[in-house]
Length: 390
Image (tube, rainbow, N blue to C red):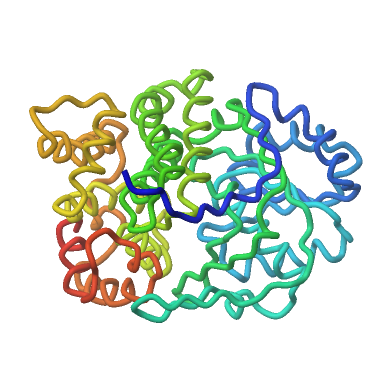
């Protein structure tokens, strides 16, 4: 057997505190970071739940301002407003509660407070076929504690997806990673069922594409195959019963495994498509992930039989041979979307058919294309996937 040669970049999260009641440990975690003046960053939907008061109570006098106007896809104008409030309140720590947009908005706030200027200028630049430029962000960043209510896994990464002018940008700096993540299943129980389902499928997409990425490696497999099995077994159960804290805890752990495993492997055509649809049409990010995943898996199937078969065994699918096992996995994923009431066609998300060609062209400029298991060199290839999904 050949030696295993790879580079694994460990995510920068320092502590993960998991279990019912984890939010009650917030004050002590802020103390541990030396924080005294916290800004709480939440989406309007989270602000309407008991979580807001519970988190504010946990913060006590350390909560000096609340920003509750987070927008989907973390638009720069929303982040700029939050930065104004943060400067006025002279904050020294960020606490985010919600889904990926709340967590990414907090990262964007930290980036702007430290670096100044505009966020798009800090965006990762990709030049086909494989040139990636990450603008330097040398300034120290405020510490950040994340309390996820969904399962997309952005709390484990040091990148943030932000949007402006119909485009999505990725801002990346290791110092932007949350220092602490509190995994409280009671927080996940506040997410609407459809959002929980879609964000869980977002985590599944990270796992799937990481397992068959051209940059996959043994540590990625260990994290992401386990994550695939947990999501397949427990996500529908959690969606069907929001008080099933056991199932919610399992899928929170799965999202953690997803976030930890995907970072060194990157992704593929699925993520490239999701990024450009989200930037241009503002459809819900997690729902685009859920919808596109089985179509991208089918398209990649001829190049990923072994990887798909490993996923099938982790899920518990049975088949006569490797090819049968592999072919069953995208269909299982599609069936999960159907069972949980998620959209199955792009037209349901308001994506017009006449816009597909532009999306296909835009996707070629996304770095994820470079690590797809089947080489993608032309917009026509991307268009095949989009047409099947439309």
